[in-house]
Length: 465
Image (tube, rainbow, N blue to C red; front, side, top):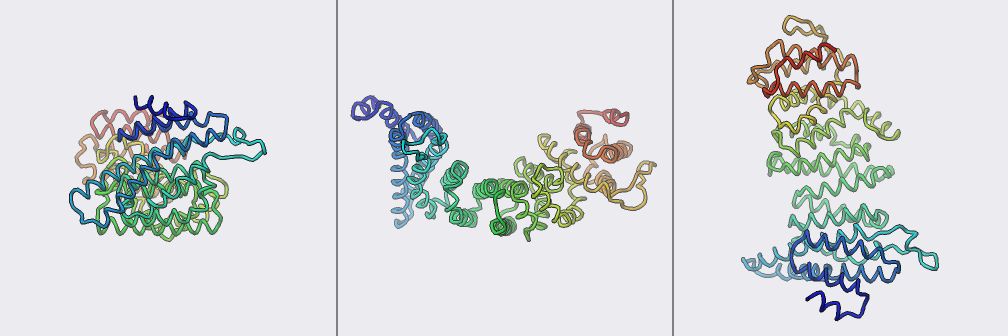
């Protein structure tokens, strides 16, 4: 009935009338998933229309109700800021925040699906119209209002949805967002300083991925300074307000962002004055987060790729940039490699969940490949057998010999530990990088032996090949 009455009241294309009714109806449900689905469907339908004026009209019909309701929610927040904060006021502000969050999610779907190939929207005078340019022009004042609102920046749902929308604009209309990028980063940094919400670091990671590869020297310096500042603010946060294990999503977001720096703007990472501190902080977070899934995986992935940067598929320019900073990276590995080896062995032997074994194995392999070529003195003696003594041998030997790390694993006798040491280092010495699949399989079997799912006989297959 509401849809039928709306259609009859409109003197427009029935298709756009149905869109209007659908959007208005779903907005009354306060159900964000339904809103995003309806908005996606209406937007996809709109851009199939051949006439550009009709597309413009239909996109306005889709977006306008969400923008109107968003502005009403913002008005509630502004008016409530001057009222004594009682229970009723707080409830109204919270309701307004939830409404605004839902509308921002809906507008993100409009941005995501409103573009079409340029040749499909060429006018008779050969000029090209971009639907997204109109959408962005319409919603930008709302985004600025939300960004400048203390209430919006402090509310996790609003800030997350706002940055999701900005992130979609960044991905869909990089050229249109570029003139505003400096302003956006200022807002994101301010929001992170105020809230330490992980969505702010996720947005920076998106920006680095999109702009980092195209960055000139000046932009690289700016990204460098941004990373240094965000790292410093995070150190302060986790030492004065919360421990890393109390804010695992912040740790996850920080090292996801840092990994994207490595892949898309490596100079900004490797030349960052905070690089050594960031590397050390990552190693410390592995111990602090105690195997928490998301933070541990992100940290291990960052460390694995930094340590094994020579194996990454990067451009020649990126490889040259990292080669120039190789000494800095190698110094960090030399300083923290033994701790990392112990952490990975500990994680595989029961200190971390089994779903993280692949990440522990990747990091372990990167460390050992880096250290296997460095001699560390006379041969190691374990179980009466002499072993070649590289730095890698020494680090693995130290970890396997630590009863505080492995003392509660009865299956790990001295003989088994000696065999694990010989097999791991032997594979890497003989096969180099090609040994990676077998080393990871061996580490998986080591974990199963520690867990009691396999017997040490599983190691025989590796000694026979």
